[in-house]
Image (cartoon, rainbow, N blue to C red; front, side, top):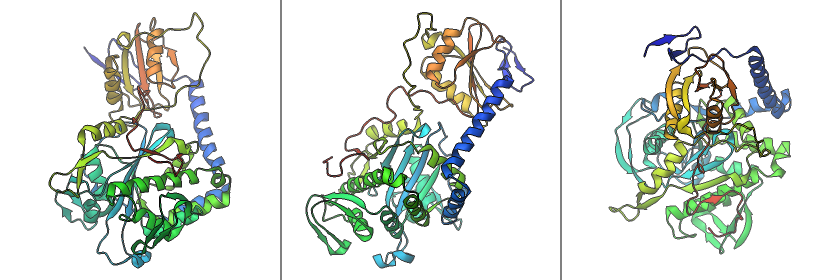
Length: 479
């Protein structure tokens, strides 16, 4: 079959014409759409003064460049989700010196926060620090390379800081990580105090001088040192295991999310700014987590409620060589990692009236002949989308790339393919099909613009796991 280059730069087979130039009306709509999105960000900021607050917050953040230390064979970015690696450091430097003397620093807590496309839901995945794993080679800031090794997962942080942990988690899960955030002891306390304390529930009275922890039984609000002692203590609560401490930390984080997303916080600008100011003074992040990225993230998460945030732990099993260590239960862990990697969940459409008798009825995927064209700047997007559609039974007849970029994704169809286009629109929602008179009869074309082409999830993104904790739960409820 001969290949032809169209004036627009799209490569296509001679019997499969290229996608058309968008009409002027569509182009104008896209420009107005972009302006409205930008305007909504400005309205969220409230005023130029509010933007000044954002700038002031941004200046308080400590950033680190890690791109050159993450390796070349990183997992591909498969969708529009956001994955942020959260690490709690036990460094004793600076304000943390009062907690004793410890050489170096370790990641007491490692959590991968996955935010689904569109900000519809989020899940925090905890990695037990006692997990025995294979760590890839790691480059330190000074250029020294730490060879690959086998050991406890928190050794990665000791070896080369956040970049080393980032590289390790990506190698273990094959999940593409976008950013990292590191918080130390002093920063943790500042954030808790800025929230006005966090509610916990203790099964019995606790007196632990080593952790500086003295709590009465029952529901209560903790601040500063008490909060830090509560999440760190290992032996006076539970069975003394790291897994039990993780469950307690997850319950605490659930309370933090519940309070931070509560009406009292969100409707009080002073409290909101105080919380954000404390948070930005307390974290260290990668230099790609810029002010604009944070504003976009905040805007995207504005509608997320505590009930859509949950916490789980990577499934583990006993490590045979050491009863005090664990290893990933791959039979259970890999489905979790795969669900996060392939998360293409989008909001369900709003309910509509029952279709009229003459409404277009879609056909089975096998009857849909689809040409997929990449008109975005993301490399490989057409092939990945075509592969996903193929797995769902669609008949892929062509995969092409365009030198010309389009702002929005289009579903176009030729004569006699209206029902086929309707079926593709179910799989790739948000893009109403349009007839195209230059198309080959019976064919459908998916032209992927800069806004992407996210496939509707066939089932829940990450299935419920035993022991998971939702952020809207009653803090005293047993899990």
